[in-house]
Image (cartoon, rainbow, N blue to C red; front, side, top):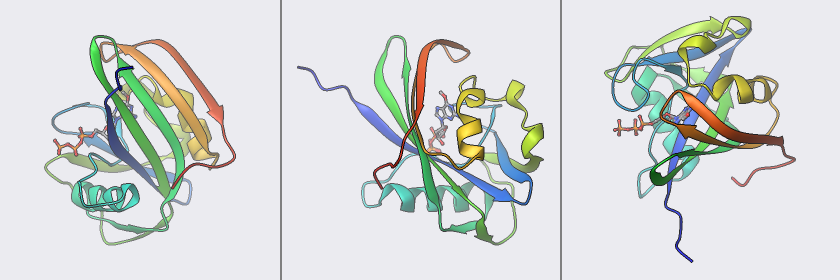
Length: 160
Ligand SMILES: COc1nc(N)nc2c1ncn2[C@H]1C[C@H](O)[C@@H](COP(=O)(O)OP(=O)(O)OP(=O)(O)O)O1
């Protein structure tokens, strides 16, 4: 049976009191959308090391104690590659929030997250992430704005 190619990506969120740090993507995949910070995993690094690196590159913060809260598979009609996104969260960071070439960061109150300017899947799984619940999810997109099917379930644990 043919193996489905998966591209492993990180997506990290930083929390501070009743706020969450989001970034507006300035270029590339998801340009214009608000999201957490993340990207591809390099050959020589673990997924959580990649999450730390991507946060530092994209918003200038050094994060520690990242907790993996979710693993989401995204499939796009007509594209054989599945995006396998590992979602992390932390409240521990040092440094100053800094705009990068890729992201324009901004703190939002957790009840004022701008879902209308984000990926369509986000309102489905953000409640789990904001409640620190672990979850697995799958979304099938047609284009970048329409979800055709999805599932999401809370889980006891996730592989590190
Ligand atoms: C399709 O739905 C998605 N929703 C959300 N909330 N986030 C998503 C979705 N699909 C991908 N993502 C995340 C995963 C990553 O954090 C970024 C995409 O990473 P990118 O392609 O920008 O990876 P980089 O390593 O930064 O790429 P470059 O090396 O080219 O800068 O979006």
